[in-house]
Length: 550
Image 1 (spheres, one colour):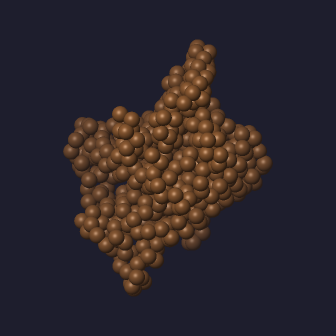
Image 2 (cartoon, one colour):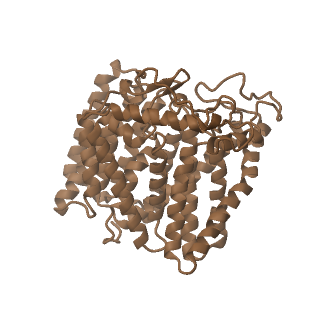
Image 3 (cartoon, one colour):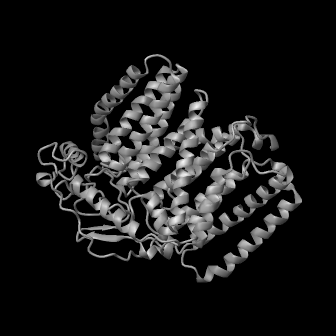
């Protein structure tokens, strides 16, 4: 039994299970309302703690200092549970928080014991851990919610202080890629059955089209990374071109969501992935690069009818629609509606709206800017947003719909033009920049009313949002953390061999960061937000040690 838990195969399956749970949490946060929004952030903390604990051998859990500390943490957590239970409304949040606290105690104990026994800190560049630790301290000093942000940073910091080997990091990255693909096939399979395409911007198995696009973007990075690695290894032709075809199909899925931020993130990942592949190959790099780009564009065009046909007609064949949160409406497709009902979204509307959003005036009927002049949105009033998940302990039922300001259900006639979107974002950026201070703001101070028809509940930029929430110094530290980690990842991928999974970490990190420059990905319990903090851990990993831990 002892040998079984220390075998590499078990560890790989365990990492896969952990990351798959994180994918499920991402879907729940992006689709469900109520207490599950409060439980998922605690589940994230539990999973990260379990990943850290998996590094240590079983013998370390039988040491007396660990057992004493574990009993103390468990007793304290259970005592807090019984004291708080009568006065809490969200019991599952409290239970999950107690479990997370016990696991936190175990990880802290193992980390301290490992550092003292080795008489050194874990190998690797300390810059990433130092920046993250500084960000965590600034969060504690801010006026914003300190619970979720501090604990998430602490969880990732404990992973920095866990002396993972390069081999373990590679196992985790491979498990992350496999879990994302598995979640995609499961989630999209369920969407093909239960989620009819009856809104202009495709929702998939989410209640928010941008969160759905962000998940598709992460799936695209996995397929693209697999293609790049197999292309460099010059083998496994069926698997290589199969992954390339799925990567092309992900562009079609994202086009159905009409999310420009996801297109930006995928474009950045594509440029880096194919660029590194060409850099490592010999021969005519420019010609091969043009072939890659042309094949990707052609594959996207050819896959669009297949993707649209599956999204449009498969749910109609099953006749069993499922709604999330406040989605129910008489305008939605119901089980008794025929397969050719006018409630379904027509492919002509999809193409027209996509061209209208990306290329204003390119198609007749697309929302275009009148005579090249855009009527800029007017800032009516600085709205006080309702306390959200982090500030008040609950999530309003419509929060996920409203957080982007351009959600599904918007008709082609009602959708604003691209010029309005740019002007609105500039207005948002100017407002948030004018409100920056040293200690940040409470969650109730977040958001502003752009005009009578558009309320922006966030900054549409994750760095600016961090600076607004936790203060200008925290925003600067967060920006330095992202920039230095991206540079470190790039150097790591260029120097390494052709079969390294660290390329996956780079593509995911760059694509999520690119998405975050135009949208928001800071909801606690969201996979992408957690990965934005966690993936740099692998970039700062030392390449000197290549042996296993057992």
